[in-house]
Length: 503
Ligand code: ADP
Image (cartoon, rainbow, N blue to C red):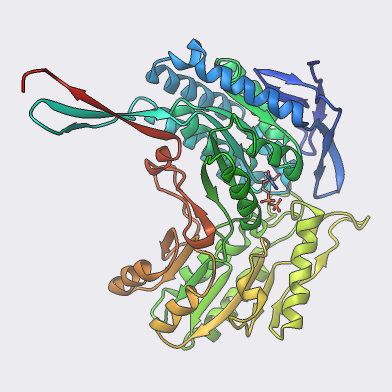
């Protein structure tokens, strides 16, 4: 397979670097077997940044076989767990040394602000790899006494070749959430980048090689979901699929994985509620609820996109929320130091937000703020929308039930705690939830009652490598991060031992 070139790029913030454009297989960047490619677009200008190779059926097969070979290869299989951890520590150091470069690439490719990428995504990416580096040599089994002469013990072994499919909203950090625990536990990986944001992951490939991972342990493929992605998740030599993305795609992936009974873990959509009780600290509730839906252009699976406010404090909350949205949510390109909200990632996402504005209006909800495309550039290009707030929303409306994945929030009232919990749980999703109250007892009671994988008390969007992350209902299966995240990447083998022949 021929090598693919690196191209010299200069980002709008002046950062210069060599962008790999190939498929990263066996520590080499390769051309696609059938010449297919995907373009990466700057959503602030709608101009092409680079064209990268897209994996065909033959390339997917090549990558999976490379991962299979590496899984059995002595340089990975016989590497001690501590040495695996050392490789991960090295990778974390290399990412950290290049953090301005990675923040630049993800901002350019995705539209998120450079400062958000630098201060949030990069801190998380380095932190997650370091956290799992530490776990590599702390994954043990158990010894179990059975009878006088017999006992059993368990060992935790890697699942095998793992296909990982990541989304575009946090490109580098989503890759680290998947790579960290998989590699710590001794698996090998074929990771597919999101077609909208392949660039930072390919640069990560150069660091994987530099850190010293044996060829084939980590492989990165670019390509469309319904082409490269679906071929990868149905490949018979893939043992496990780990996916983050929409619930509809997760359902398709679960179907494809069913054919060979692959192990799966899924992190999918959400319509997470945020409840403001009448005794809440109002300034805190406004601050966190704004961040919970408007940060990262609202493109967060855990975004608290349904705000429920006690009727006694509703008017005060709404006035303050709208004031904060007006004064804080400055929309502009990724590079402005005072930009809060950049462009949406793609034309499809931009259009999706505007479509939901029309749906909300058609359903009779009140558009209290925004709901428009914004012309930030003089040439009319750029995928900008205004932050959008709907009120007078009822649970039968699509804008209450469906995930928009943009800076788009619905705000509604409740009369008492039972109604708040019922409204919060009136969704097919169950990813995050937030509760604002100064009543300690109520905080924990409601946290326990809400159907969600994660609850924030007097906060929103907290995320930490040490804390399990994931959803219930149609928001996912399994957990990432924390000690719980190791379970997705190990399988337990039980070994029964008979110690003697004397009965
Ligand atoms: P979005 O619609 O916002 O792009 P998706 O859930 O479709 O969200 O995409 C998340 C990831 O899943 C991307 O990497 C995408 O390429 C991939 N993907 C989409 N469809 C499939 C599929 N049928 N099989 C495997 N991966 C897919």
